[in-house]
Length: 224
Image (cartoon, rainbow, N blue to C red; front, side, top):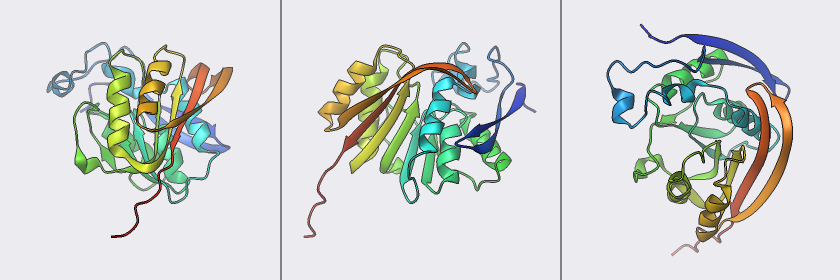
């Protein structure tokens, strides 16, 4: 039996009603088999995957307004997987990824709540090379640059798993590491555009920050 408590939230994204199972509150910790501990997840940060964050709401709204049909999409640091749910509902071929040991079970529960087929999940670490994950033409994430070591790890992870021509959408609540990440993405050949988002209310709380879009176009190699 779970040793944590959950709640159910209901709100609209792009005019469509979504249902979300999340942790009841942030002051929770449950790691009876020390799985999270072995992955480097501390008790203080254990619950963060299970919270609906404002940046995740902004990313989901962004994905509700662009054409996703047929696109191969990876959500990195998916947490509850709201952006993956929206992309999946709109016809994308989605894979969700997170290091937290409970992210997969919450994602499956949330797909079921929204009458969606299961979303493929990949438990991964940005610091580890994993060819099995594959490559994607759209990679998305929200509020990921919260530690000084993450811009390099994330940009390298994106490079390993992006197609030659690819787009990356990253929502950031002005945590201060955006410029460093942007420079690293430039090294990988991505152009950068920024949209400033004024403070406004979301289902996850107040958000003010930026939506970054990184794009790269490479000519396909001619057949041998």
